[in-house]
Image (cartoon, rainbow, N blue to C red; front, top):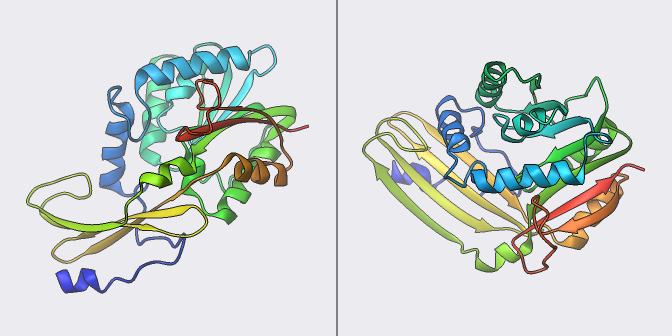
Amino acid sequence: MNNEISKYRLPKIYEKGTDNIWTDPYISSRLLEAHLNPEFEGASRKKPFIDASALWIEQQFPMVSFSKVIDYGCGPGLYAERMAEKEYDVTGIDFSKRSIKQGKASAAKKSLPITYICGNYLTWQPQATYDLALLIYCDYGALSKEERKALLTNIYASLNSGGQLLMDNFTTKQLEDFKEETSWQVHEESDFWSEGMHVVFNRSKKYFQHTVLEQAIVQKADTMQVYNIWKYFSTRDTLTEELEEAGFTVQAYYQDVAGRKYDASAETIAIVAKKE
């Protein structure tokens, strides 16, 4: 079994694995648990930050001018619900069926008129246009250069003239502490990656273009699943360049989506960009 794992070659940059964490029936359930845990920062940020962020967004983008909002990568609706409670007209799109199902159920329970769409935001074509687009929790950093370009093109097309985009991403500051390493562990019982007994081989590798791979190879008695999780780290200049290539005009820089003052040494950057 170990020989089979060790033979798995190092993937090319942005190469897909055999499986996806957001569509895997078991792992997606663990991710949803993480999303909904207000004390855990992993699939989403902790509740106090989300509350502060939603309040800042409401102040920065008042409903009188930004009433129609689309949340790209909305998950189970942590931001969508907070904005709908303030009477914004909110649409959320996400790749995870489990997250969308949870979002719909929660919205129905709270009588919130949120439109949820389960789909791939790289290819989805909206039937309406919006005043504000959100791309939060560094979704951008999980995408290849071609995918980032496609997403920004789609977001631009989904906005009204004068519409704005609020997004964030990891910065290259995080790369300073990144360590390349490999490890493996035997799990006698169910864990994050799989149910029942299994072995997980982890590999962290730094690539070019400010990109790293965090790979998990999950080996069971008769199956092997490969999860390639890519992270792209931006600088202020590279993120600005990509937005401008998509047609946006950058309006402001912040440290995060709670509106903290921009800090070049911070591990995240948030940008407000406008469709002229």
